[in-house]
Structures are given as structure tokens and as C-alpha cells.
Length: 64
Image (cartoon, rainbow, N blue to C red; front, top):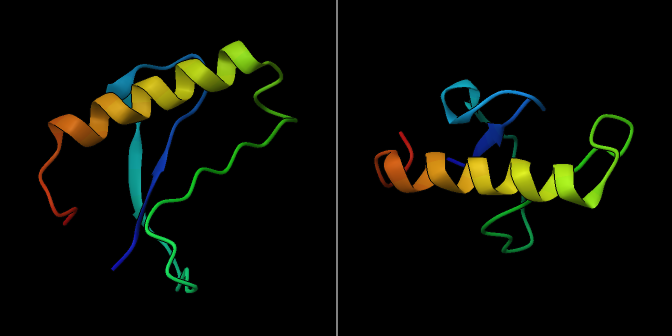
């Protein structure tokens, strides 16, 4: 089952929350969703992605 990693700007990887995603379909294996009303710059988006990647690398695989 697909998992979604949520990051709230201003937090660190401990605050990345993993949740279940509905059927993503179409063969998509990974998805990044950026809400530009919350993350208002490329730098903030890059920081959020880096933090989420840290969480994915340290977590168990496959995501439980």
C-alpha cells in the first residue's frame, strides 16, 4: 500500500509523518506534492524534500 510522507515547514525529520495514500494508479511509484501556499520558495521546497529523503532512508523498507 502506498505511503505518503508529510513534512510541515520549520520542523525536522522527526516531524515527518507517514500516512496511507489512496490508490495512486497509473504506475506512479513515488509522488511529490508541494503546496505553494505553504512552501513559498524553491529553497523551502528543497529543504522539505531533503528532510523527507532523510526520513525515507532511515525508515524501514518497504514502508510499513
